[in-house]
Image 1 (cartoon, rainbow, N blue to C red):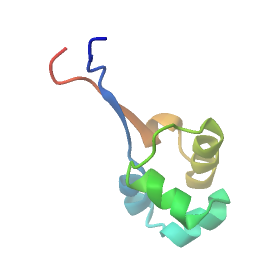
Image 2: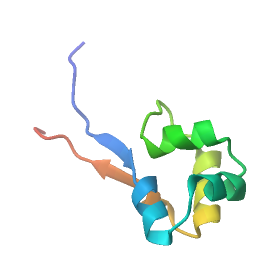
Image 3: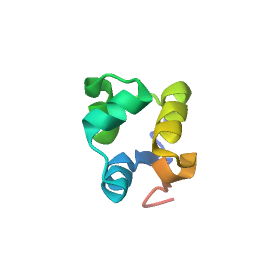
Length: 77
């Protein structure tokens, strides 16, 4: 099997939290998430995105999905 670079998905939670001046504790409370799970999302240290979690984050941050998720295309298509 050929290893193909399709690009990657990057979460922009840290930037959005800084813009809204919201702490990890407050966001964890609002989104009803464990801080450890939220930290993994902030660090982009997750393997699979959970749409329910993304919906909770959008609700808690009062934003759209595209404010949180960004597609980074491959460097050599």
